[in-house]
Length: 283
Image (cartoon, rainbow, N blue to C red):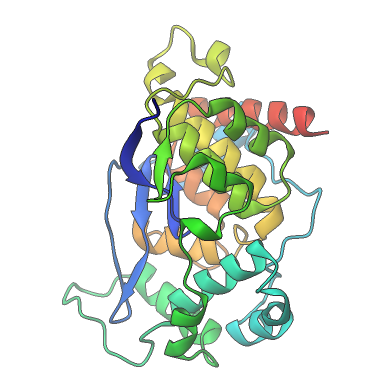
C-alpha cells in the first residue's frame, strides 16, 4: 500500500538550502512558509572569493540556453512564450512564476519593516521587470500538480508525494530536459521519507555534513535545472525570488552567489562534486 507525506509538490515551490518556501505575492511582498532554514554565512566577500578558489566552486551548467534570457522583462518573456504555453510545461511554468512576481504591483507593501538595501534592489528590479504585466495574468497561468510532466507520476491525485518512487525520481533528474520536472523530482527526493539516493554519500561520510546530504543533493539538482530555465543568473526570476527572501539582493547577484553565502566552502565543494557526477551521468 502506498503512503504519502502531507507535503505537496508545487511548481511554485522554491528550495534553497533547506528553505522550502511557497511564493505567495501579497500586496507586493513575499509571504513565506518555511519548513527549515539555514543561516546566511557571515563570511566576507573576500573570504568567499578565496574559498571559491580553494574548494572548487559550483560551476554553472552551460550546455543549454535557458528559456529565460538575460535582460528579459515580463513583456519580452510573454511575447516569446505565450503561444507555446498551452503545450509546453516549462513555458507555462515560467510564465506562471513571472506573473506571480508581478501580481499586485501597484499596491503599497504591507510590511512596515524598514527598507534595507536588498529590498530596494528587489523592488527596483520588480518595477523594471513587471512594467507590462497585469494581475489577471497570474490567474491565467497558475499551476498545480496536475500540470507536471513526467513528475506527475510521483504524486497522487491530491498532490501528495507517493512513497517508493525514488528510482523514477532519479531517472527524471538524470534524463529529463524539463526544468519543471527536474525541480519536482528533486523536491521528491529531498522530502519523501523513504527516498534513497547514493549521490554524494561517500563525500559526506564521517563528516558533520551527513545530516545535510539531501539538502546538498537538492542544490546539485537545482543547478542542473537552472541550465534549462535560465533563471539563476543575475536578474533571473529564481535569483531574485531567493535573494529577496534571504535579504541579500545586490546588483549583479546570482543564485550561485546566494548559495555561496548560505553554505560553507566544504559543503559547496560537495555540491560541486555531485553536480559533476550528475552531468557525467546525463551525457
